[in-house]
Amino acid sequence: MAHIGDIKRDIEKPHASDLGDFTRGIRFARVVDVYDASILAASSKEQDKYGKVSVIFLDGSSKPPVLLAVLRPWFSWSRGSGIMYMPEQNDIVACMMQSNGYPVVVGFLPYKWNSTLNKVVPADDMAFGDTKPLYKGEILIKGSSGSSVTLDKKGTVTIEGTDSSIADTVITNIDDFNKEFTYDRTKPFADSGISKAVFGNSYYLDGSVKYVGNYPQIFECGTSVHGNLMLDLPFTNEVKFTLPSDTEITKILSVELHSIVSGKVLKSMVLRDYQYDLTFTNIYPYGDSSQQNKNHRPATLDKNLIGYTLTLKGSIVSGSWTSIRLNATTEKFAGGIRVNNAGDVFIDGRNVVVRSENEMSSLLLKDNGTANMTGVNRTVLGSENGGQITCYPGGIGYSTGIFDNGNMDAIHHKLPAAIHSDEGHIQYFYVSDQFPLIKLYEKSDGEWVYDVVTQEEYQSMSPASKVNVKKIWFSKYIKFLTEEKMIAMMGKDVPSYGELKRAG
Image (tube, rainbow, N blue to C red; front, top):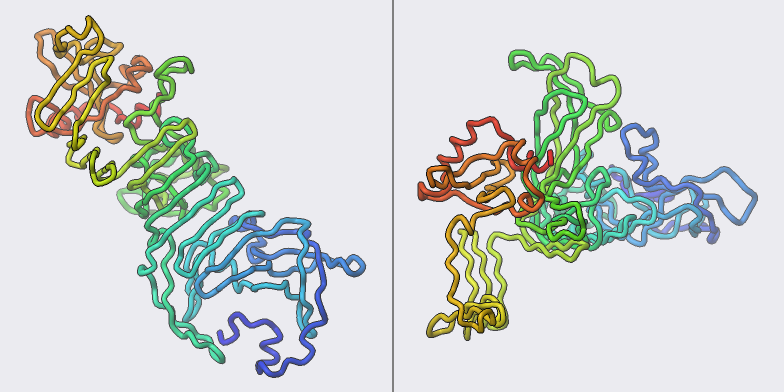
């Protein structure tokens, strides 16, 4: 362990003053092969070559390619920080020749690059900081604090900010000129991350584009909550499931097959990554299929739900297995601003506050269900020509606009006129994707009641009704939707709102 980070010359000549004939000048070479993140699959036999390149020297006759570590402008193996990128074929590198060793690409030489990939790996008394796997042409700039900027192959710029106080103390085992025997290293972003900004398209694990609303997301700035997931699924060659809204799987830790009888595990098997596929589907009220219709792919109050499909491949679909256990890490969007390429802006948060200078006017959306819009001089709803309500410091005024020269009385809408849809005097509500879809309608005796929506009813609903489902929450008053009413209705065998949206 005393030779960590040393090159061959340092080992053979440990005294810094014993320089000798260290170099023989600069030689230029062409990169012919790049061993990037694509070789890190479990089925690859070349994982140890990650971060290296094969080169052919240009100043002599053609010889077999030489395997070299990739040039780094700066790289600190102890914390996994630096300016990192992955070169491409045909790039030219400058090598400095050692008199008694292999050629050195001018720059920083990363030590055990493949041991730092997105994890902290103990090795005896020391460990390596985490970095991210890169593909050809990508650039990662990461500081010792754990914050980073990534320019990936799909044109996305990701900026991640961390809380550097969430750290581990590392004790090194390096002798000689080491002056840093202990140091603090920020934990990986999943533990220490406090904010992330994404410019450009974001993608799920299977390469599909992330959506916010009904269109691909092109900007995100906010914070997320990270967690671990252990999910037991029924054994079948293709199983579908969903997680809570705005929750995605960020990394698959393992997929296991279990044979369980009477609650006991008789046998189990861990699958390799080429034995299964996990695909992602965006679920959001789509609306009318016609682009000319106002209900075509609208923005609604629904949060994005992700449909997951786990597919087993090969002969493992047969046998005496009873269940599939999925272990993964998850990320749930907690709050921030997101924009899609249709121009829809989504602002989510615990309490949402919009205010002008010196709080002269403001909009406050509170997590207790109240909404306040105020202006110091006046608060206006509507427009002068079409009708408006104005709140002054000394009173309230309203105008019906230019209709009937402004002499029309304010209209009183009775409940049947206010509650309506294409299916009649019915209004649809949802509490969350995990609960059934609710309908409010008038019975023949004139009583208004809540009931659940079946899959057949949902499929017969018009596109306009599906995209105009209203958000509702439980009330303490028995005339409205209470938790007790919901529990009673859930006794019926009906799908959740999320399952209805996924089935269409």
